[in-house]
Length: 363
Image (cartoon, rainbow, N blue to C red):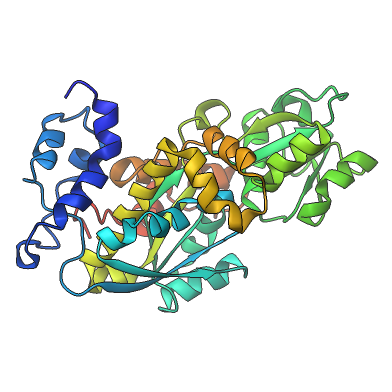
């Protein structure tokens, strides 16, 4: 019990392995340990010991192997945990057979695909999902996967050194509704800058943002990894801010979302899928070099660069339960500041509505 941090990272892994020795009839889907015990050993260190001894009910789906479909963006380094879960046998250990759907459509189409059963779940950016979820898609966020990956760049020779210097500047973005555009608009608002009046946003194809900066069409560009990292290194750009800046240093940006009907009809499968994806995140955090090798076929980026990106993210930050709800509510409140969410939206109430704590058994 001396190393609580190591115990925290290995807990899901231990639960998954222990599950293989537990008879199927012994695994009641609603009997999982409280999420505080599963993910916050500092609040109850003895919970780790109970889990390690096999006394805590397992998270593996009982009975026949579940066949599930998971949507992801195969080009986004944020989702590296998805192929890791398959390549390392994590899905199999949780009694899951997961088919990947590489989704390139709009967020509304993605969430509709999950809500209507064309997929069982997906990985996405909280700042892109929250507005559509406000409108009522039957999709529930069950876990956060990591923080980091959205970046703001400028040329080395400029006098733009911080968010406070963005007043009157032109920022290039790939999408006017992109998570990074929303995030840096939020940072500007917190710095006393009106992102609508004091900043000019200009849209360019993602792979041309670096060129737009070179030509002087914009003063700053915003981009997500891996493209953001690649452009920074290639063009020797200065990173002004990222989504781990300031009090966002411990805020999740990517989340797991499952169809509501899966949670209602097969909680064990929903729990197993969420737990498997979180175990994969622990693997990413502990093994960035191996993860880069697994993800490299999807990215066409040298593995050392991919590993460096992964190390810069917070793949060890995977909030669930109350902590996740609080982080989602914080983003909802932020999005109200930049006129993305309705002004009369109650952040805490909406966060509670779009989130389900499948690992804690509260449905």
